[in-house]
Structures are given as C-alpha cells and as structure tokens.
Amino acid sequence: METQADTNLPELSVGEISRLLKRTLETAFPLVRVRGEISGFKRAASGHCYLTLKDEEAGIDAVMWRGLAQGLRFRPEDGLEVVATGRITTYPSRSRYQLVIERLEPAGVGALLAQIEERRKRLAAEGLFDEARKKALPYLPEVIGVVTSPTGAVIRDILHRLADRFPRRVLVWGVLVQGEGAAAQVAAAIRGFNALEPGGDPPRPDLLIVARGGGAIEDLMAFNEEAVVRAAAASAIPLISAVGHETDTTLIDFASDRRAPTPTAAAEMAVPVRAELAARVDEAAARLSAGAARFLAERRQAVEGLGRGLPKPTEILALASQRFDAAVERLRGALRAALLVHERHYSTAAAALRPALLARSQDAHRDRLSDLSARLAAGRARALAEAATGQAERSRAHRRPRRAAARGARTPPRARRRGRSPRAASCSRASAIAARSRAATSSCGAPTARCGAARPRRAPARRSRSSSPTAPSAPPSPRRRSIPPRRAGADRASRATASRASSSEGFRARGDGLYL
Image (cartoon, rainbow, N blue to C red; front, side, top):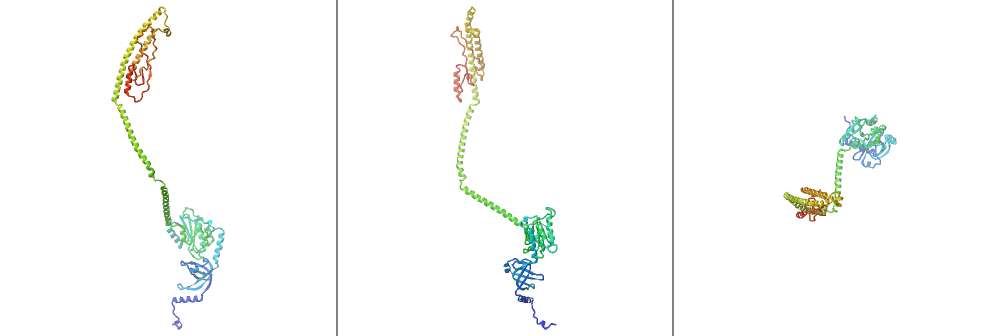
C-alpha cells in the first residue's frame, strides 16, 4: 500500500535525473585541483585528449579539449604525475563523472617512470643506445622473423600488411607480451633467431620485428626490462621495435635499429611496395627516355646550328660533279678515237699479213733466189775457166826459171823465201779459188745461209813477170762489210730497186744485213 510520502515524489526521466546530477556536481565542485598519475593517455583524431588520473586508491577519468592540448608546454605520457585543475561534470550517456581539465602541469615523475629513467641512463652509459651500433635495414629481405603473441591482432596486421606491400616469407616466434615471464621469453626469442644458420631449415631471418599492441605503462613493462634491452642491442640481425602505439615509448625502442610507432608501420618499414617499385621503375624508364630524347634534341639543334654555318654539300660537290661529267665525256670520246685508230692499224696489219700476199712475197723471193743461183753458177764457171787459163800461163811462165835453175841459174829469192817452187804456189792458189767457189755455191743455195760466211781467207796471188798483161785475173777476194740498219717502215719497192741495182756487181744474201 502506497504512502502519502511516496505518492508526493515527482517522477523523473533518466535524462532529467542525469541533468540534475550534472548540475549538482558542477554546483558542488565548480573548480577542483587534482593530483595523480597519467594512465591510458590517448589523443583523438579531433585533437581532444582523454586520460585517467589515478593513485593507489582510485582513478578518475579526465578530458582535455583541443584548444588547451595544443597550448601545453610538455608532452603528456603515461606514468607522468601531474596536477590537473578543472571542474567535475558527468557524461550522461555512460552515467560516469569526469574531470574537465582546464589547466595541466607536471607534478613530478611517477614511480614507474623514475625507475625506467634510471635504467635508461645506466644502459645508455654502457653504450647500448649508441647510433654507431645501429645497423641498416635490408631493402628487400627474403625472410622476416616476428616476435609477438601468436594469438593477438598484431600478427594478423603484420601479415596482412606484408601481403599487400610485398609478400615475403615470415617466421613467427610466439611469446607472452605482458605479465610474469614475458621479458624472458622475448629475450630468448631474439637470441633464438640469431642462433639460426643462414640458409638452414628454418632459415635465418634477414630482419626481426618485435611487436606488441598498445596498453598502459604497466602492460608494457616487459619491454623495459634489462634482459630484453640487452638482447636487442646484441642482435646481429637488424631489428625493428613496434611496441604499443605512437605515444608509447619503451627502452627496447632505444636499443633497436629502427623504432616503428605501430606494428603496422613496422611491416611498412620492412618491405617496399611492389607496385611503387614498378611505378618507380616505369618512372625512371620514362625519365631516361625523356632525358635521352632531350639530349638528342639538344645535340641535334646544336648540329643544325653548326650546319647552318657550313655550305651545302650539294654546292660543294656541284663543280666537282660538273668536272667529272666533262671528264667522263672526254674519256668516252678519247676511247672511241683510240679504238678507231687501233682498228685502222689492225686492219692495215691484217691486210699486209694475208696469206695471198705472203705467198706472193715468198714466190718473189724464191724467183730471186733462183736467178741468183743461176748467175752464181755462171760466174763460178767463168771464174774457174779464167783461173784455169791463168794457171796454165803461169805454169808455163814458171817452167822457164826452173829449167834455167837446172842449168845452174839461181832460184828466185822470193821462191826461196817461201820454201817452195813457183809452180807449187800457183797450184795452191788455184785450189783455194776452187774451194771458195764451191763454198759460195753451197752457201747461196739455202735462203737463210750467209753467202761467204765460212769462206777462208784468200792468200795473196803472186804475179809472174812473164805473165801477159791481158790475161784475165782471178776475181778479187770478197770483203765482208756490215750493212747499217735500215729505217723501219722503208718502202719495199725502194729496197727491191736497190737490190736489183747492186746485183750487177755481184751476189747478195738478204735477211741478215751482210752481202758480198
């Protein structure tokens, strides 16, 4: 049964009670100053910042609008102890109250951050974070090793991104990424990948990725452990750290060769985009072609500019071509004229060498040779007769001195000097004349023999005192004389006339330039 007091309470809607609570909190706490440690800091795409201020007992959500966040002189991070000034209000959609920060300033380093900072300084003093120790990432690794949780969303993001950009072989070493024993497993995974043999089964990776999703600073403490930092610094394989989100920083980020803000960004750093590589190659090819074309165009323009200062080749060769044509015409005329001259010479020579003309010339020489043979025979007979007559007369003339010598007369001095009688001398002279006549007859019988070439030298004839002055004497001993060379091309008729004129004085042998 309802009471009067219950029925007098007004009925409020959810929105009305939420607005009453909001007004009550804002009226009761118009401005407060809260000290706490930042946890779960997040910057939205709109620029607003959302975080939680906590201590050992409780935590309160807080929001900082974009205008104030842009004016901060420091970067809010998880674990940083701050003093926030603002007002308490509610968020009706979730029935939660929150602090709207109007001013934020650091209150000192938190306990966790102080511990991490002290460890960072100590490891940096050992040189584990030196830039000289960092290795360059391979441009296109064949095998990529990933150290992360095998069941989380991180490995799926990495594999998906690698497949989109440039598919590579991926080896996953599953580990715990937070809680007890997570740091030892991460350090063991890094050392295990380095212990693999290159080209073995499984092969040694060319690049390592140590990845974990975002979380509070307490969740990321495994990657701030000294064992993990030393394993990353000692890795011979280039290593990319991708722990948390972009605002999260751990000590492994200082020891790794490259820090990625997110696991997806680590996959993008690991491999290039194949399509981009193809586009770059095409672009380079296009630029090369364009550069070559431009280079050729510039050189062509330069050559054309130089060519304009030179005379045209046709003008240079015009005069020479004209002279060449004229020389060709003159050469043709000269060749035709020379051909005609040689044809005339050939015709003349051919006419002179016809068989009929040669036969007539041979007949004429044969007739001449017969005539000379007949004349030679007549002359030889006459010479023999005259020689015989003279010999008989000389014999009679010489008999008288011998008979006188028989009576006591002295032998003529000349006969004594010769050692023989006058009769013997006369006989020897007659024999010599006969021998020369026979030699001349035999020599002149052949057309190619020399007349008198082998005739012996005639002994001088001895003339008797008693010989008759009117007795015919022996023909004079012929003398061999050389005929001077006749001029080439002399007329055959003049030579024949000269030959007939000389035949009245004796006989000649033609063909070798000698005559008797």
